[in-house]
Image 1 (cartoon, rainbow, N blue to C red):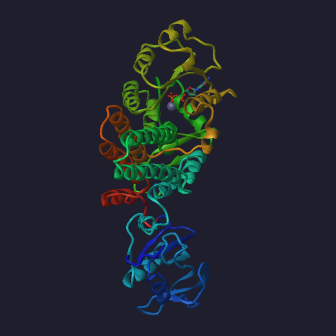
Image 2 (cartoon, protein in one colour):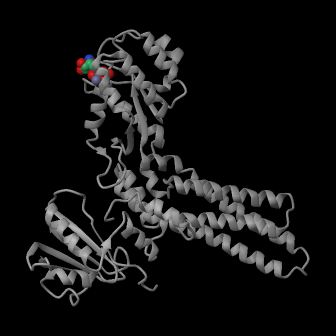
Image 3 (cartoon, rainbow, N blue to C red):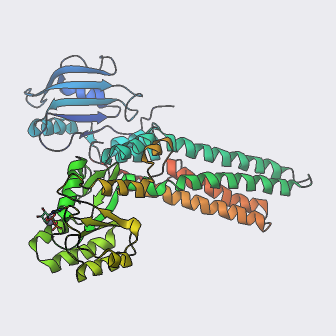
Length: 463
Ligand code: GDP
Ligand code: ZN
């Protein structure tokens, strides 16, 4: 593959904004080495070997002053992140020096990179495909080890290979159809060709359905499971939440450096990332302003994939509890009988009028019993106890991929219907080609420029 020279040279600070132990300025493009060499005092960067790191100083060309002591990595095309020449300047993590170095570089032969532009170049220069570029972002944002594993598999190209194979299968059959159409003098050629299309469409559709069956779990791993913890004030919601947080150490706030502006809280429950909906509401209930607490809970409820309804089992059911029980009946739900260390005062016969046995879990936020059962239940609900096995399968996690797979499935349905009603083969062929196109959008074999803009703009600056 040839190395593209059609792009200009770009630069950005690739470490998160602010002060740090080190910061890294990344330069990519044909002029990367030349630019760095102009401001670097040390070995001649134009002559050093590729993939070496070099000690030296950055000198301000305006006045000859030393700006910082640095280590400079030189990586020549094509074995680099972007497939272009890449230079990375590791400087002491000061904000002023780092910004100054970037400014100097931008005054020479480079311009400031757009968010995600290094990764976009990796795509445009053919090092990775679109689904792999998307995996880079998923990897940055991964909330649990499991989410990371799935993103890493996708980055390795597992999903891409599967999609490429499906497309090749379709292409082969389309080629065969062309050949057959060219020899219409043979008897039966129409029937034979239709059967060929039918077989292949059925086969590819089954594989797409298999992939789509992983989508629900995949999406949870990628985006987190929107979870609302609701209940009357003082039943123990904050205590349970603290337990979940302490048990699995990681509370993951959304990653610095991505352009999402909402800060979300995540709890890692046995590999399932719970995205807590309206945690502010949970703490608010301590105010004893019951009405506000309940109103907030109600809002959280409507946004949740999972509702954890907490009851205080040391007091009888209240009207408000009954109301919440009714309101959450249609949700994916776990009803927690908290304070199980105290004597139970809840009329269980009445409770069963609202709740199935399988939805009930006991917990005690103040005894060793803790919230272990609750955690087990959450994990079971979403991975049928087999979360460890997910790494063996290729998963789809991304809404864009899921949408395209569904459309491809629909196109294949049209192929099958067409054949059933005896539609001419050249018309059926159109739907088959459409399935091929749609699958190609997943890997970026076909794409619109707007899609690239929209995708890469979600990346952080310098990635
Ligand atoms: P919230 O208002 O629903 O968030 O309830 P909190 O978590 O703030 O708990 C209210 C009170 O109940 C606090 O004094 C907790 O220590 C206590 N509490 C919470 N969970 C338990 C439990 O399982 N057993 C007992 N005995 N007390 C609990
Ligand atoms: Zn509380």
